[in-house]
Image (tube, rainbow over the protein chains, first blue to last red):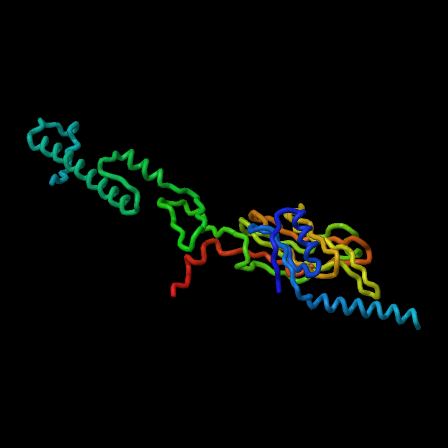
Length: 67
Length: 235
């Protein structure tokens, strides 16, 4: 699910980002219609892949230390 | 109706005493000329009224000439503001253009790029131009791009900030975008552009072990009139 939240100033923006740390910021729009932050509640697939890459990297380091 | 009679134009070389017939010819030709002028003026007045330029027989020739000159629209550009935009009355010199204004929006994608990447070997820590688009029209456009946080995955994972920014003609124009993780965020902003403006995407990294990537740089607009003026559901 995507959630779009409008903000009008920088303080409001920071507050929204703080309040939605459990979600993924996927887009920010500063357009004629207003300023918007777009969050996704679903982890983006690229994040899943990156997390896996990081896990593999950490595992490799752990293994090299053991061996 | 008066008729034209050949005038006698040799009074000097072939003089004679004028008689009634001569005066009738002269007066008749004057009457003919007056009638002829009025008829031709009437044709001009009718034609001008037909093309929407209001004139009347009561106008003097100077007034008619003034009205014709006043209707000259010169090199007027006509900007489309609705689906059927009315062309103002008058005549044009052929140099004007019908212009579709650029209105920022999502309706029509004008351009979409591939991906770009910047690291220390390319740019040190300076802003680096990775894409440049030349505008051939004026108005406002919506520009979006994906910005991926900087990372380096050769065993260790560095997640430094990566920066992206839209420039115009070599100067910063958009908001400086920054991402602190390796997640991709899309940034969208509207810009006013002029003909021949260079719209550029610049990237920058923060530390030597990172890179920043961007992609799907798009330029989009919307149709410059209300869509329901073209089609709307009525049943």
